[in-house]
Image (cartoon, rainbow, N blue to C red; front, side, top):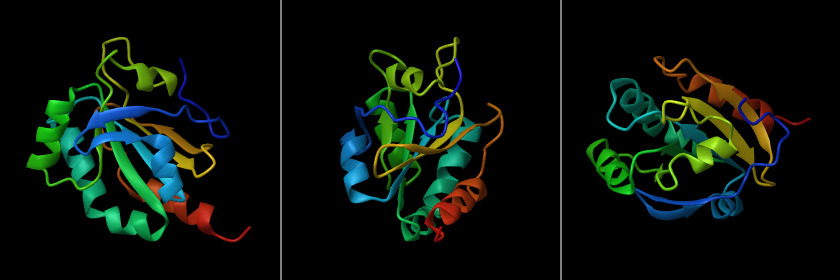
Length: 156
């Protein structure tokens, strides 16, 4: 299964996590873009550094009209503890039951029961404008997201 490509309609979802229940369509009403950062496992070293980086650049995302959301197959209690320990002020959501349903809808659920390390930028119309799957063992960083958002915000 391939990751949901650019131009696709993003499936709407509601998941629980660090900020209680979060619904994609509600976030899209409040922001020009929503960054969906799927990650394999809370508390793993690469995932921790990746999400901490997104926290560091959260204001830069906001200046470009974007909110970031982390998603993994961990439970909501794990996500709450992970967000608290790392002082993450953006939603970290649990794609826990049925496990990986949302990751599968975005084409990034792995056969081993974890989500791929994948990034999507969804616009306010619910259309995927950016799609990237990273190597599992490497953080994709934030530069590619910032560059993509800047291009999207540039006058046509």
